[in-house]
Image (cartoon, rainbow, N blue to C red):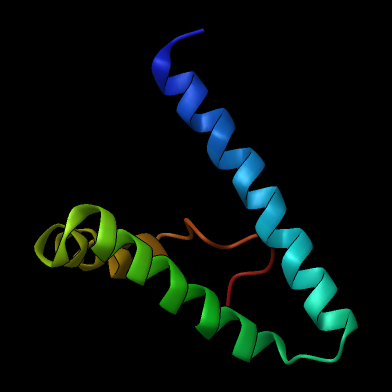
Length: 78
């Protein structure tokens, strides 16, 4: 298995953990909007700690195009 495949597998497994955490928190009555904002904050904080502010800002600059292109959509487009 290639290194990029290992990385992709790890991301899929990690995403599963995040989905499970969201489901558990929602069952406990936490608002999904609050969860999403907290997850984004935690993710960006980790990216900054790992790659630095500039590299994370460059990553974030690509997000509007990805959002508009449906990269994060799982169902009906708004």
